[in-house]
Image (cartoon, rainbow, N blue to C red; front, side, top):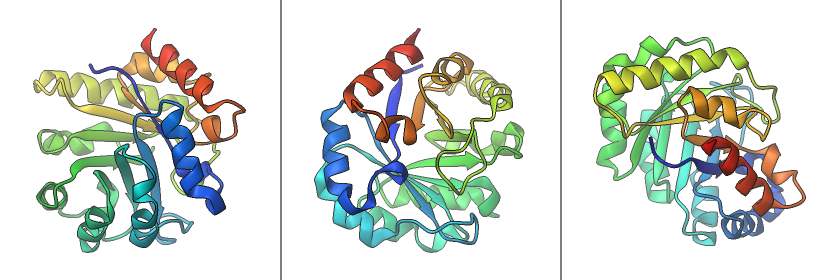
Length: 221
């Protein structure tokens, strides 16, 4: 497994000062920037689209990790890649042709990811693990920030990590998103996750650098 990566979610940032927020977490030691895209259909909320991503892309050189919580993501993957997405994650539940969609992401020059809602079993993506760079295990039901972490997702993380090792995919990233903080990060890391999305835990803290460093340390124990 790789060293733990911390990806602040700008869903929890002050939308009126996004550029400043990106600079701040970059200076504080973040590894990636997590961008939650919601369409009001797949999930009950609306957030960012390609124009916003393009507008903030020059604020940091950190990779943009774009999580598409949208219906028919295949129709707009190219737009997100052109806007500056380095990584694009789609939901298994939203992709009837998941193999094709993951290949489309790669063809656009981005790293691919596949996300699972809490009710979707790990086995649902066994057949595409070799086609993707990352699996995102949602530890809350997607749609809103600040929700409580669902601890039963630990078994799903373990199952995916074990399957990846069985298939010889030791470099597969397992990302977790939802209620990740200094209180929860250690146990999800021990279950096999190596990329940690944190919104409120970082952006509502008084010292971003201290919070990120603490989370990284806890994920390494």
